[in-house]
Amino acid sequence: MSNNSRRDFIKKIGIGTAALSVGNSVFGGTASAFSAKSYRNIIGANDRINMATIGVNSRGNSMGGTIAKQKNAQVITVCDVDSRAIPKAIDTIVKAGQTTAPKSEKDLRRVLEDKSVDAIYTATPDHWHAPLTIMACQAGKHVYVEKPLSHNPKEGEMAVAVARKYNRIVQMGAQRRSAPTLTKGIQLLHEGIIGRVYMAKTWYTNTRKETF
Image (cartoon, rainbow, N blue to C red; front, side, top):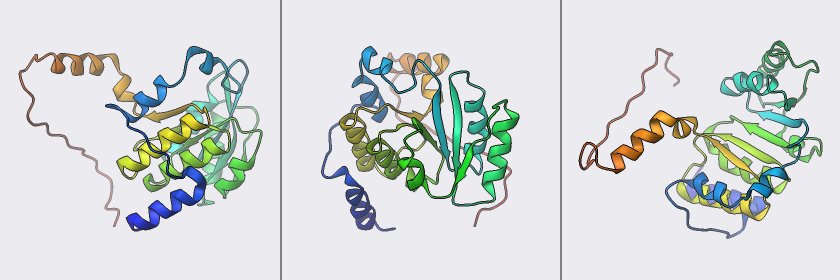
């Protein structure tokens, strides 16, 4: 999809021209927009949160089981365009101890229309992360979205804007940024423990088969 096509698509789902500056982290900005009172007002905060998992072929399958193990949450719907992924996801949730099996859906729009869904978890392909986050907020859902939040920085800003506009809680799955050891490490780097940082290298290794 071209950049122009993506831009038109996101405009059509209602974000409009809203944009704002964000700091060092997209969701650092979002979190700061909510007070303690806001968090207490999350739907289901004092009861059980009804979740829908969208994109359940791999990471979404695993996380469905994790959500099902939480005492204050349950997965009531699993959604994926690949019907082969749905039975596996339901099985994972049931094996995790959830007594009621979730229903299934192939069209994410139907999930967003469901008033019984308080929040969604999404592990869809990356290019769907920002559009789905925006659509979910507009539908009144809170969102946990896997990284990366967006296809480009602009889409990230648009997701932040819509979360604030609709007063929704949005969390991106960047768990390592919250790990105490790594947080301390970044602090030390900023304080100059190894001097001026001018280059960083990173890599990822895996034995999986080729994907093309």
